[in-house]
Amino acid sequence: MTIDFANLPLQYQRYKDEIDSAIQAVLNRSDYIMGDAVFQLEQALQSFTQAKHALTCSSGTDALLLAMMALNIQPGDEVITTPFTFIATAETIARLGAVPVFVDIDERTYNIDASAIEAAITPKTKVIMPVSLYGQPADMDTLTSIARAHQIRVIVDGAQSFGATYNGVMDSTLGDIATTSFFPAKPLGCFGDGGAVFTQDDTLAETIRMLRVHGQNRRYHHKYIGIGARLDTLQAAVLHVKLKHYENDLKLRQEVAAKYTLALKDKFVTPFIHTKCTSVYAQYSIRVAKRDNLQTHLKTQGIATAVHYPIPLHLQECFSYLNYKEGDFPVSEMIAKEIISLPMNPYLRDDEIAYITKNL
Ligand SMILES: Cc1ncc(COP(=O)(O)O)c(C=O)c1O
Image (cartoon, protein in one colour):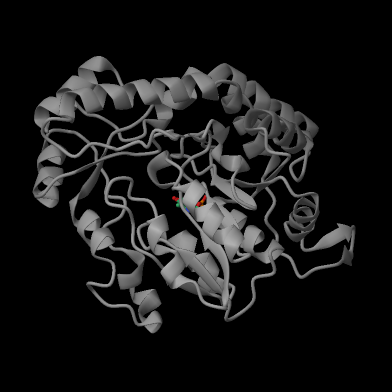
C-alpha cells in the first residue's frame, strides 16, 4: 500500500466539478487581480470565522508581515515567539529589522509556554506572537492577560489552525490580529500560495487593506510604504468552493485524528488537546524515541511522513546573530528530535489508518 501525506489529488477530485467551474468563471471574467471572487471569499471568511474583518493576501508569510507592519513594528523592537515553528514566524520579525525573542514551549501542547513569557518581556517588547501549532491554539487566556498588563499587542500566527477554536470562538478572532495560510497542504488550502489577516479593529483593517496594495488609499496615492501582497482571484475562487465544504472536511480530519489516537495512545505520546481548544489537525504528530529509524521503516512500507520541525529556530544558521545556543530551549530541542507527523487528510480510509498504525 502507498499512502500519500496530504493527498491533494484526492481533495481536488472530491470537488472537481465545482472548482473547475469556479476557475472557468474567473477565466471568463478575466478579473485576475482583486476580482469578484476575492471579495466573495472575504465575506465568506468573515461569516465562517465571525471575525469583523477578513483580508486575504498572497501567503501566510505575507500575512505576518502585514500584521506587524500594521502595528508599526520598527527595527530594534522585540517580538516574543516560539522557537518550535516554521521559519516564517521568526523570519518575518527579523525581515522587519525587529528581534525575535524566543520562549520555550509547553511539553504537552508544543505551543509557547505562556508561564515563561513574562520573564522575556523588556521595555522593547512590542508584540507576543503565539503560533497555533499543528492546528491547536496556544494558552491565549494567560498570554492575553500578560499582554494587556504590559500593553503589548498580540498577533496569532494561525497559519496551521484555520477553523480551530479557543473557548468556543475561532482562532482567527483572537489577538489584535490573527493570520492564516492557504498553502496547498494546509487544512484549507488553495492551489498555490495564499493567506489571510483577521482583525476586529477597523483602523488596523483599513491599514492592512492599504498595505497589501503598496500602501495606496486610492489608485497611485500611496499613504504608506506597503508591499504587493494580493491574493490571486483564481486562488480565491478555489478557496471559496473549498470553504463551503470546510466544516465537513474538518469533522472528517478530527475523526481521522480520533482513530489514530485510539490505536496509538498506549504506545506513543499522541496529541494533547487542551479542554479549551479544538484542533484542526493540520498535522497529526506523535513522539517517538528513535524517530529517524521509524521514518525510514515507514518509508519502506510506502507510508509518507514528515518532521515538523527538525531544527528549532534558535539553532538555525540564519539566527546565529541572536547568540542562542544548544540547551537554551530544552523542551523545543527534545521535541524536535522526537516528533513525527503521520499522513493526515480528511479522506484517509479506515484500512489505511489500520495499515499505518500496524506498521508503527
Ligand atoms: C506556523 C506557520 N507560520 C507561517 C507560515 C507561512 O505560510 P505560507 O507558507 O503560506 O507563507 C506557515 C506555513 O507553512 C506556518 O506553518
